[in-house]
Image 1 (cartoon, helix red, strand yellow):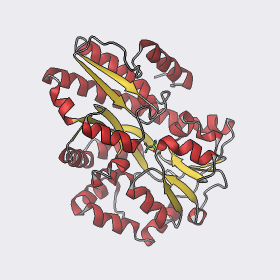
Image 2 (cartoon, protein in one colour):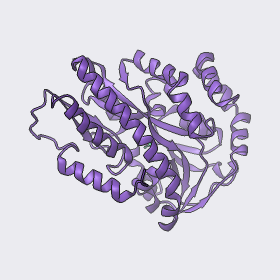
Image 3 (tube, protein in one colour):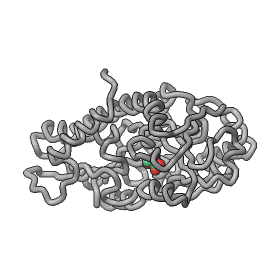
Image 4 (cartoon, helix red, strand yellow):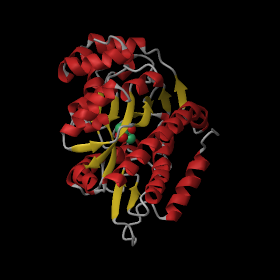
Length: 338
Ligand code: X2X
């Protein structure tokens, strides 16, 4: 598969905008079901490029009955707003990190436990297997529908405008932005940092105005959201793997004829698999591109960070919060943590 370049993504996205699938509000549609898919990522992120392809396949696969309009880049509100909207039916589809979803489904943050996953093979075996099935079951109990295949956000790296992060001591009193999630806040408090919960829609301006000194995200987001413009250092901490569940409003989902539901699920899940390959390739190849844009990289040793979390009681605290069943599924996938 040819290396997916930013130009390819822009070309795809540009075509999509031209084709009118990216949230052109008020456009007349012959479809029986016109559903909105909202997300918080830039239109150039692989998630939106693959979602556009899926929307086209859904339209053709349902003979035009189902049209999915894509609203990227927080067009319909922040993650907090959009979670409310997918629950109420204001939007029909929404991709959301399990760590943010954990404000509604506590178990959904378990894949974000610090320094748990060593590599992508371990991630997909867990998230497409028993641990993912457990989390999706908990999401269903909260009244939402969730597709079988989680989309990739990636292994998260730490950026800063003030200094590189080399050892856990560099995180002491570090003013870091974290997404709105109890687990993120808890982990950085265990490092004696000063975490501030901010929705992604506000991150660029918070960094630009120095409300916070740093943030953490995979390279694909640091690139597509242009965070390199307001950060100087990028420490390859790989401190967390994060993904996006494709959520659906239950009433809207059940309104679809069964055959059309099967087409939508098939195309969303196929797009998630393609997006995983795109993101992994991007994240593997972006370091040089970002160095060219001025980011100074370092690669810290993860062992002292994991030890700090252990000695701070982070793992045992979260084992107690998730319960034995969920924690056993996590440790079955990644080995002993607590
Ligand atoms: O908010 C973030 O940092 C992001 C974009 O990675 C998530 O959606 C969790």
